Length: 150
Image (cartoon, rainbow, N blue to C red):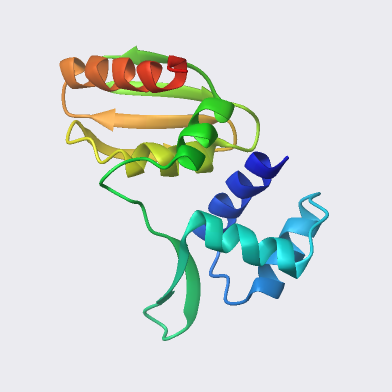
């Protein structure tokens, strides 16, 4: 439950400009997660969300990827959300559990792989764009290795 909730938080702050814990709490409750402000506060701290100033001058929560290494929580999001992947030339299609594509895509972005040009996430599918088919194969192998490790 906690991993799913935290994945939803990563998705929400990636999609919306959320200014307060109360606003995030309301969005989670509307998404089917029964949470309190105290739970949201702990999740924000655990996920290491930070407030950034938007171009409009508002302060909103953002997930800032740690490029040094993946935390166990991010690895768990990837493992819990990952269903399968397949490639077509330089395009990698990653299937995820329903509703976790954005959170898994954020984790893939946090990998900071030079082979990846970008990711586009839907509800249960991620399109990972690489420069070459060889790059795509390397990314696919790295993702499978992370998911399959104990």
